[in-house]
Length: 190
Image (cartoon, rainbow, N blue to C red; front, side, top):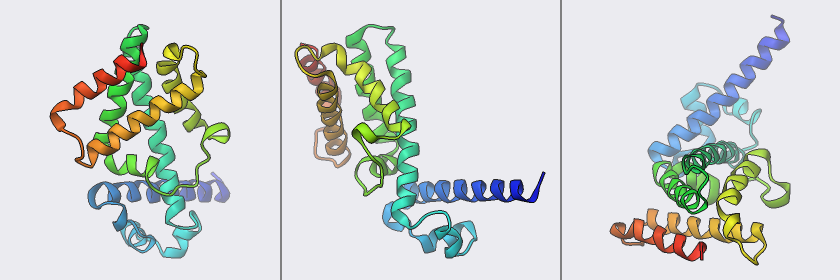
Protein backbone atom coordinates (compact mmCIF):
# COMPACT_ATOMS: atom_id res chain seq x y z
CA UNK A 1 0.00 0.00 0.00
CA UNK A 2 1.44 3.33 -1.02
CA UNK A 3 1.74 6.39 1.18
CA UNK A 4 -0.91 8.24 -0.85
CA UNK A 5 -3.40 5.38 -0.45
CA UNK A 6 -2.79 5.26 3.31
CA UNK A 7 -3.27 9.03 3.60
CA UNK A 8 -6.49 8.88 1.62
CA UNK A 9 -7.76 6.05 3.82
CA UNK A 10 -6.84 7.94 7.00
CA UNK A 11 -8.52 11.08 5.68
CA UNK A 12 -11.70 9.11 4.88
CA UNK A 13 -11.61 7.56 8.36
CA UNK A 14 -11.28 11.02 9.98
CA UNK A 15 -14.12 12.32 7.83
CA UNK A 16 -16.32 9.44 8.96
CA UNK A 17 -15.27 9.95 12.60
CA UNK A 18 -16.25 13.63 12.48
CA UNK A 19 -19.71 12.82 11.08
CA UNK A 20 -20.30 9.96 13.51
CA UNK A 21 -19.17 12.01 16.49
CA UNK A 22 -21.34 14.97 15.50
CA UNK A 23 -24.31 12.69 15.19
CA UNK A 24 -23.67 10.98 18.54
CA UNK A 25 -23.21 14.33 20.28
CA UNK A 26 -26.39 15.73 18.72
CA UNK A 27 -28.37 12.64 19.69
CA UNK A 28 -27.19 12.78 23.30
CA UNK A 29 -27.03 16.54 23.93
CA UNK A 30 -28.73 18.29 21.00
CA UNK A 31 -27.32 20.21 18.06
CA UNK A 32 -26.41 23.24 20.17
CA UNK A 33 -23.77 21.07 21.83
CA UNK A 34 -22.16 20.31 18.46
CA UNK A 35 -19.35 22.78 17.90
CA UNK A 36 -16.11 22.43 15.97
CA UNK A 37 -14.20 22.90 19.22
CA UNK A 38 -16.12 20.17 21.02
CA UNK A 39 -15.84 17.81 18.06
CA UNK A 40 -12.08 18.41 17.91
CA UNK A 41 -11.80 17.55 21.60
CA UNK A 42 -13.92 14.42 21.24
CA UNK A 43 -12.05 12.99 18.27
CA UNK A 44 -8.67 14.21 19.55
CA UNK A 45 -7.71 16.22 16.50
CA UNK A 46 -7.07 19.93 16.23
CA UNK A 47 -9.73 22.31 14.96
CA UNK A 48 -7.70 23.00 11.79
CA UNK A 49 -7.89 19.27 10.99
CA UNK A 50 -11.70 19.44 11.22
CA UNK A 51 -11.71 22.55 9.05
CA UNK A 52 -9.66 20.66 6.46
CA UNK A 53 -12.68 18.34 6.12
CA UNK A 54 -15.59 20.74 6.65
CA UNK A 55 -15.80 24.53 6.37
CA UNK A 56 -17.84 24.65 9.57
CA UNK A 57 -20.78 23.27 11.48
CA UNK A 58 -23.25 23.80 8.62
CA UNK A 59 -21.25 21.47 6.39
CA UNK A 60 -21.06 18.86 9.14
CA UNK A 61 -24.82 19.07 9.67
CA UNK A 62 -25.26 18.77 5.90
CA UNK A 63 -23.23 15.55 5.83
CA UNK A 64 -25.26 14.14 8.72
CA UNK A 65 -28.52 15.23 7.04
CA UNK A 66 -27.66 13.55 3.75
CA UNK A 67 -26.89 10.29 5.57
CA UNK A 68 -30.15 10.62 7.48
CA UNK A 69 -32.10 11.07 4.28
CA UNK A 70 -30.54 7.89 2.92
CA UNK A 71 -31.50 6.05 6.12
CA UNK A 72 -35.04 7.41 6.02
CA UNK A 73 -35.34 6.32 2.38
CA UNK A 74 -34.26 2.81 3.36
CA UNK A 75 -36.84 2.71 6.20
CA UNK A 76 -39.55 3.95 3.88
CA UNK A 77 -38.57 1.58 1.07
CA UNK A 78 -38.77 -1.38 3.46
CA UNK A 79 -42.21 -0.21 4.59
CA UNK A 80 -43.34 0.21 0.98
CA UNK A 81 -42.16 -3.28 0.07
CA UNK A 82 -43.79 -4.82 3.14
CA UNK A 83 -47.21 -3.70 1.87
CA UNK A 84 -47.16 -6.33 -0.87
CA UNK A 85 -48.03 -4.00 -3.74
CA UNK A 86 -51.43 -2.84 -2.44
CA UNK A 87 -51.36 0.97 -2.93
CA UNK A 88 -53.40 2.02 0.11
CA UNK A 89 -51.47 -0.31 2.42
CA UNK A 90 -48.21 0.94 0.91
CA UNK A 91 -49.14 4.57 1.57
CA UNK A 92 -50.15 3.78 5.15
CA UNK A 93 -46.93 1.84 5.74
CA UNK A 94 -44.75 4.63 4.35
CA UNK A 95 -46.60 7.27 6.38
CA UNK A 96 -46.20 5.30 9.61
CA UNK A 97 -42.56 4.56 8.82
CA UNK A 98 -41.84 8.23 8.20
CA UNK A 99 -43.43 9.27 11.50
CA UNK A 100 -41.63 6.47 13.37
CA UNK A 101 -38.31 7.58 11.88
CA UNK A 102 -38.88 11.18 12.98
CA UNK A 103 -39.62 10.00 16.52
CA UNK A 104 -36.83 7.42 16.73
CA UNK A 105 -34.12 9.70 15.29
CA UNK A 106 -34.98 13.22 16.51
CA UNK A 107 -31.52 14.81 16.11
CA UNK A 108 -31.11 13.24 12.70
CA UNK A 109 -34.57 14.40 11.63
CA UNK A 110 -33.75 17.92 12.81
CA UNK A 111 -30.57 17.92 10.73
CA UNK A 112 -32.49 16.67 7.70
CA UNK A 113 -35.40 19.07 7.77
CA UNK A 114 -35.15 21.77 10.41
CA UNK A 115 -31.56 22.98 10.42
CA UNK A 116 -29.63 25.00 7.90
CA UNK A 117 -28.04 22.64 5.42
CA UNK A 118 -26.32 23.06 2.08
CA UNK A 119 -28.40 20.50 0.21
CA UNK A 120 -30.15 21.15 -3.06
CA UNK A 121 -33.71 19.90 -3.06
CA UNK A 122 -35.99 19.44 -6.06
CA UNK A 123 -34.56 19.04 -9.52
CA UNK A 124 -30.93 19.51 -8.44
CA UNK A 125 -31.10 17.07 -5.51
CA UNK A 126 -28.36 14.59 -4.70
CA UNK A 127 -28.94 10.88 -5.16
CA UNK A 128 -30.01 10.21 -1.52
CA UNK A 129 -32.66 12.93 -1.79
CA UNK A 130 -33.86 11.64 -5.15
CA UNK A 131 -34.06 8.13 -3.66
CA UNK A 132 -36.12 9.39 -0.70
CA UNK A 133 -38.47 11.26 -3.02
CA UNK A 134 -38.80 8.18 -5.24
CA UNK A 135 -40.10 6.14 -2.32
CA UNK A 136 -42.58 8.87 -1.37
CA UNK A 137 -43.60 9.18 -5.02
CA UNK A 138 -44.22 5.43 -5.26
CA UNK A 139 -46.51 5.65 -2.22
CA UNK A 140 -48.40 8.84 -3.08
CA UNK A 141 -48.59 8.96 -6.88
CA UNK A 142 -51.25 6.21 -7.32
CA UNK A 143 -53.69 8.60 -5.63
CA UNK A 144 -52.79 11.82 -7.45
CA UNK A 145 -55.80 11.64 -9.75
CA UNK A 146 -55.97 14.83 -11.83
CA UNK A 147 -53.13 16.44 -9.87
CA UNK A 148 -49.52 16.45 -10.95
CA UNK A 149 -48.13 13.32 -9.22
CA UNK A 150 -44.91 15.04 -8.09
CA UNK A 151 -46.81 17.98 -6.63
CA UNK A 152 -49.24 15.60 -4.93
CA UNK A 153 -46.25 13.77 -3.43
CA UNK A 154 -44.71 17.04 -2.23
CA UNK A 155 -47.95 18.01 -0.49
CA UNK A 156 -48.27 14.56 1.08
CA UNK A 157 -44.68 14.62 2.29
CA UNK A 158 -45.27 18.12 3.67
CA UNK A 159 -48.29 16.90 5.61
CA UNK A 160 -46.23 14.07 7.11
CA UNK A 161 -43.50 16.52 8.01
CA UNK A 162 -46.05 18.76 9.71
CA UNK A 163 -47.42 15.85 11.72
CA UNK A 164 -43.94 14.71 12.70
CA UNK A 165 -42.85 18.19 13.75
CA UNK A 166 -45.99 19.01 15.71
CA UNK A 167 -46.09 15.60 17.38
CA UNK A 168 -42.42 15.72 18.37
CA UNK A 169 -42.98 19.22 19.75
CA UNK A 170 -45.76 17.95 22.01
CA UNK A 171 -48.37 20.05 20.22
CA UNK A 172 -50.69 17.19 19.28
CA UNK A 173 -52.58 14.68 21.41
CA UNK A 174 -50.38 11.56 21.70
CA UNK A 175 -53.35 9.21 21.95
CA UNK A 176 -54.54 10.31 18.49
CA UNK A 177 -51.40 9.46 16.49
CA UNK A 178 -52.95 6.50 14.68
CA UNK A 179 -56.22 8.38 14.13
CA UNK A 180 -54.37 11.27 12.46
CA UNK A 181 -52.63 8.89 10.06
CA UNK A 182 -55.97 7.20 9.29
CA UNK A 183 -57.56 10.58 8.50
CA UNK A 184 -54.73 11.49 6.16
CA UNK A 185 -54.81 8.12 4.42
CA UNK A 186 -58.57 8.47 3.91
CA UNK A 187 -58.13 11.95 2.47
CA UNK A 188 -55.20 11.07 0.23
CA UNK A 189 -56.79 7.93 -1.20
CA UNK A 190 -60.19 9.35 -2.15
